[in-house]
Amino acid sequence: MVTSINELKRQGRKRRKERQNVKEIILQSPENGLLVQKLIPVAKQVYAARSEVLYSVSRLVNFIVIYSCRYFYYFVVKSLIKCYRAYEARTLLR
Image 1 (cartoon, rainbow, N blue to C red):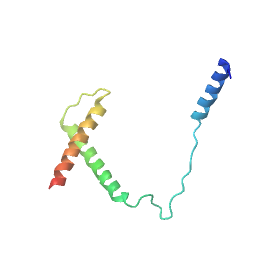
Image 2: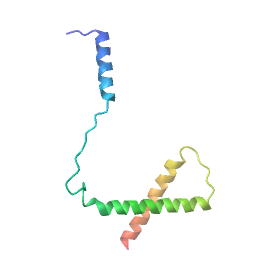
Image 3: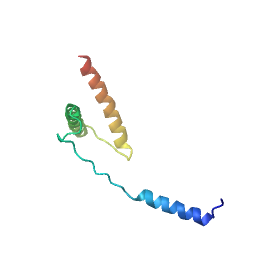
Image 4: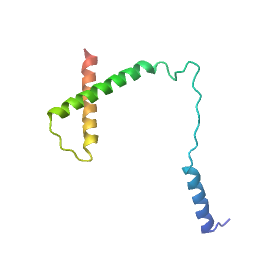
């Protein structure tokens, strides 16, 4: 069956408009109030590591003159992640 170009365009616009609509799914919380009980210690470690990284970066910025561009954040974060992984590997080996 042959479909006209205008009909194809109309269908495409309709599909695009439907994709833009956000369909929210409301999740019910579990009875104990926690989604995954085992992830609580991991979340605490991640938060502590994040705090340590932010503290270290703020101290580093006070001692080093930094000239930045729009790609600065990407490179700094990438190098900090490498340093943190190396530090974490050293502490795990102890």
